Image (tube, rainbow, N blue to C red):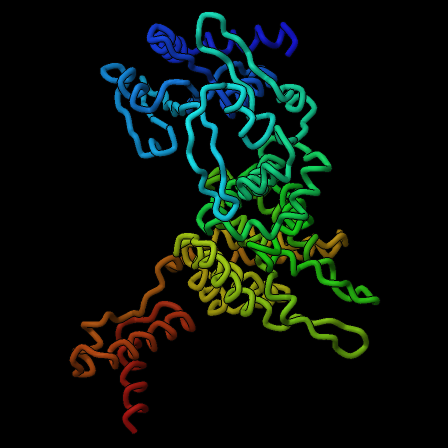
Length: 482
């Protein structure tokens, strides 16, 4: 590492009083302690961007055993936790800085699960050698010397935006297949380009990802999607076969294009929809960003197309009801990946609704249709707006402009109707108590059926006077009794 860069790293460490105090405590007790891994990497990237500093969450490594680390933190750290102590990690909060201090490790893996046979190490270099990528295998001593240790050329790789493993990629991924998904994430998060041997190993060993729990896979996939520009990472995810193992519906979008080109490349289209959805999300000051639900919906909204593709007369291709099939596939896959129920239902609902707008024609929707669009979307309406607009990827400027203008008119209709009616809370004009009193019913399923009738009536005709609602309910009830 060039002397000037070493000095930059030392200066970054000195910017943190907490790190200086950690160094003093451990050194006084006769132990080594180093800033390591992602903390060094991110500090270097911050310096490169002109915003020097160290990240709020700090990764440290030491030759002190976990019990000794806890003793050194006692009475100094605001709080400590030992949930990772079986793996040598002690956590601490010191004046708002979160520290994770891990004993040098010399682990061995059984190659059947990703759980290591934990073994303490005595060498910093051996500890760095077991890490996933060279950019995470750098350390800075917090002792007086502030020595920078970079045995595998991580700094050079970071500068050149290169992704390599400290040792053979096959050995690294055999130890922990989750590292292959971490490689995908680092393409999105850090803009790194994996070396050919890393890509070859990922491709040859993609099936090993099946050893990893769904929760861990989901966490890495979500982190990738939440980056500013995940497209290149997702292309690597699919090209190496990793997606075949954990998200095969995405790989299946690479359908063979028919010779007459009667449908667009659904895979490329989906990635473009994701790009455009992210742009709309980031441009909306009222939206949370990054938005995992919107991004999952943008990526997966067309996964029903492979199962519904039909070759019609005159070389045409159709995908009838792909939104219905897609919604079911989304629910099944996201549940398998252990996404929270609210995320699963929201992404599935957006997938189901994403084609509804195309029935709007040129703006001839009735008020009833507009009410149903808003009511069916519910709280997802702002996301549905973004998804539908993003779904336009045509290169025909005139057609794109026409679609945008038509959706503008739909949104204007929604605003207009919302000013006259509370579309966000469309409810029947009579509540359950009024229904029971009017029809002389006890609580039970018939009350629910009457409530749903009035809800449909409200959607169809808008707000009704109580007398009109009562008349309609009596007529409906009489017809049922006839």
